[in-house]
Amino acid sequence: MTARKSASNDRRVDDRHEGEGLFMLFDGILVEVVDISIGGLKFRRPPGLLSHGYRFTFELRSAYEDPNPLAKGVAVVRALGADWVAVEFVRPTFSLMKVVGRHIGRLLIGRSHLFRH
Image 1 (tube, rainbow, N blue to C red):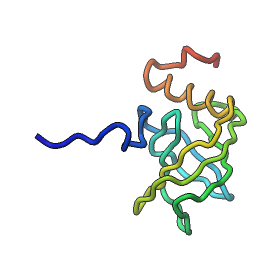
Image 2: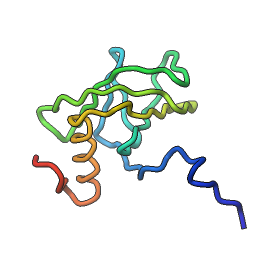
Image 3: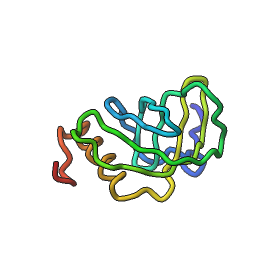
Image 4: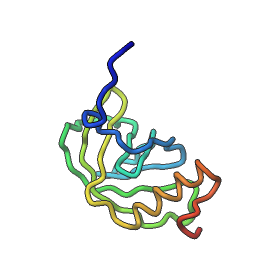
C-alpha cells in the first residue's frame, strides 16, 4: 500500500475539467486552456519566460459563446512544466466565474443550470 498525499499538501482541491474550447489572452499572447477548475487553470506554455509567482491580468475566451463575454481576471503562476503552466485565480470576478461555470456545466450536464445562456 502506498502512502496517500494529505489534502493539506495538495493545492488542487477543486475538481479539474477539460479546457477544450477555452483560450486565455495575456500579454498579447493567446494560449489554449488544458484544464480548468473554479480556482484556476492550466494552459499550454507559450515561448518566453514565465516564472513561479508571476502575476498577470488575462481575459478568458470561450469558443462556445458568441459573442465572447467580458471575462477578465488576475492570475498568479503556481506551477510550471515543460509544456504547461498552472495558475491560480486572484480574487476572481463574477464575469470570470460565469464563464468558468458555464463551461463546466456544458461538460457535466450539457448546459449550465446556474446561469442563463
